[in-house]
Image 1 (tube, rainbow, N blue to C red):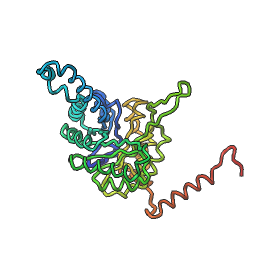
Image 2: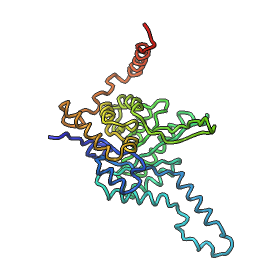
Image 3: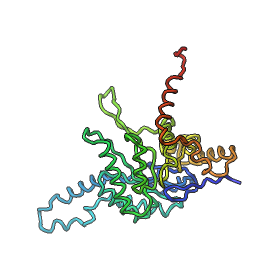
Length: 339
């Protein structure tokens, strides 16, 4: 008898907990079919960026304005559709076609900058047939006037606005650099978020010492980045009213998937490992997870979820973490450390 890998995420039933997160691999129907055939429990489409839409709209308006005053009928040279951005139409077509092309849930990803943008496009994405929407909140509050309270309030506001405009599940993907992440997660849960994705990676710039210029490129994640996610998953597990938990940084092998599940993740998302190894790597991850569960005489993947959660009373968790921090520093031994 095989291992039951069925899990639940955002109220959706998935055949297994491995989700292909947003990447260029899911930008075409052929790629989406390949991810599904490789065993993905669900697929997150690449993000629809509000800036891309606004940029194309600005370009269209500039084109329409050329020669518009040369004749009173000049405006009729351009059909109304020219003025509309083609970016959301292509994205909505991808959502609709992907939802029909594969049997696994297709989750759209929306990366907006204004509440109106989030709400308008979320409603259109729902109408196109997405199983759920992932709100990819990527904001670097560099202004000294942007307080933590303001930034978190903005985040909550957009979630509540989107929640009021659509019926399908919504997940919120966040970076970890909030002053009190646990409190924010609980507020998002109360505001109607059906899931929280840990974490969005910040693509910080580096300095090119030869050209003396800033370089901003995409650096694929590494397994060493899983520890922060493990920490927060173990603390959040069982402490939210209904929101699912998704892990999404540093997954490379089945060991990384298992650790995230043990810490409390409902699903484990991966992009970097698939970009490095190809969509077929999903089957290797699944095989490793299944073998690990079988060797320990479990029957279902849900049996291992949260086994390594933090069982400390919430009032004592900060003291426990500080104790671990002190022990780590005071007990370190290396080749150049004596005594």
